View 1 (cartoon, rainbow over the protein chains, first blue to last red):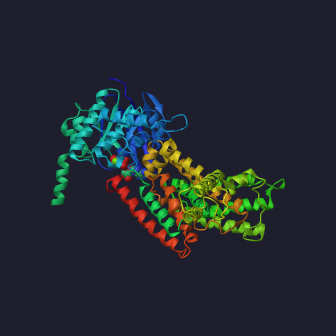
View 2: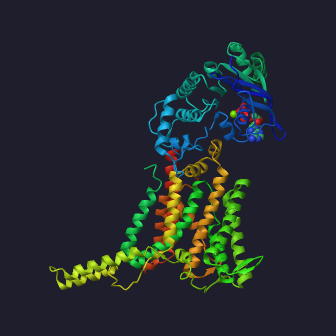
View 3: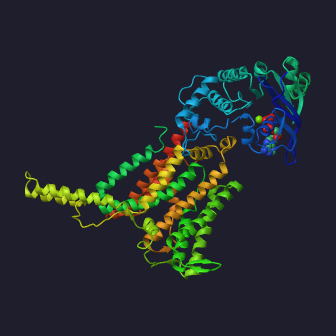
Length: 258
Length: 381
Ligand SMILES: Nc1ncnc2c1ncn2[C@@H]1O[C@H](COP(=O)(O)OP(=O)(O)O)[C@@H](O)[C@H]1O
Ligand SMILES: [Mg+2]
């Protein structure tokens, strides 16, 4: 098997006295979708924020292509090839698609001027490569559908050299049809073979549809991991519920209903 | 329509121009009227551009007015008493006084911006604090150094200093030269034409004279206030930067959603601090023009100017919540405000206080209109 693109060792993140991540290990491989699953508050968002340079880790080490890295800012992480698509997508609604696509990494001409025509064309082409038909890169992002926004955020990350694409609950705020659109986009990216996708989700069905490998988090710790083959369907369900047996849950519910 | 934030401001401006032209019987736009109107439009426009860029980036600056008074005080005191250094007191030229003053005001702008971005406090409250601080400091300095709350009767530096002439003097004299030249030719043409009765000729010449194209009304105007030049320069640069450059994209991104901007590598804090400094720069230009034009300064200068600047920006289509707006709209807003502020001079029967009634009404209407545009873009959120 190929070497992992990213390896995380014993990652710890504390917010004051509160430990959000308590020694997390994770490996991510190119051409794979790696589902990161866990209940609300498990530490999924914190993990990817450390990985994308938003938070400094309290302890542990991140390796990118075998080399230890130390991100001081999101810019560092982006330069190392980590492209993050946050839950809020990091898009600005009032600005045009192109202005969002190139936000922070604008193409400049000789006098610091924006090369707007070129930027419009790139934004248009890159989005059409992985997503739905889309025609007007000068439209405001606020006028686009949720699925189109996801496509924009993903296309942007890939265009700017993401080797690892981190998607934080990309399907949670969307309708049924748009969810399938995003999953399709993920599969198109996966097919390229050179990009690793970390897919954070609550949704067991979605993760089983697209993921090759799974890691389960609960209260800041890894409680289970494996490839699709290694994990039986039932295992996934048990781990999704934070490690409790379904039977235990049923018993617990029974005490409530009396 | 949705993408043109300045469309409302443009319509209001056209209505005001037409209404003022009619109500003043043309006086508002004869040679002298135009000069006076453009003087106040430029004055307001200079600070409104600074306020507008800052608002697009999502922050307010209430310290503009006191910054004007402070800068005016510094320049006037230096011109009167010289520059105090550890090596003695030196007499300074207007240019040196300006440079030293600018260093101080930019320092204050930097301080305000840094406090805002570091503390995360609302810029409204931080700049309100500086409103009091700078107003007080200005008056204290005036009294300590000059034993008075103003400096007046400075020599006229415009003759000896090129810089003073460019700030407080006149520019674009060719405009009025051309205006009068055309007037003379037209008048001569009317006089020598064969197929007009004598009465009709006199009437037409008097009419043309009313618009002053032939100096008939004896208004001797040789150019625009130099402020116009600075307004054009500042607005031009701001327009280019905002709409055509990377920094412009960063300004929009910062005001729209600063977390999204930051996540994409936009140096949000540096953008904000820079724009607080730019606002201080605009206030300093305002003050420099004022001092070198009138050869005086006063602790009460710049009163209400921060509120007028913000109002112009809003009327020009800048969103209170940031992230949207254009410099063109601000220019339209400044023209509208300047004309209405000056209207009392051209329409004798009007009470000057109507200016504020008008401002209040238009401001409220503009806020509603801007909010509608925002909702349409963001899908009603
Ligand atoms: N900036 C922060 N400061 C303090 N606590 C935080 C912060 N971010 C997250 N947490 C806490 O860390 C825990 C994990 O949160 P998060 O990573 O968002 O979980 P998930 O994304 O899995 O739902 C939660 O208990 C949350 O309250
Ligand atoms: Mg989360």
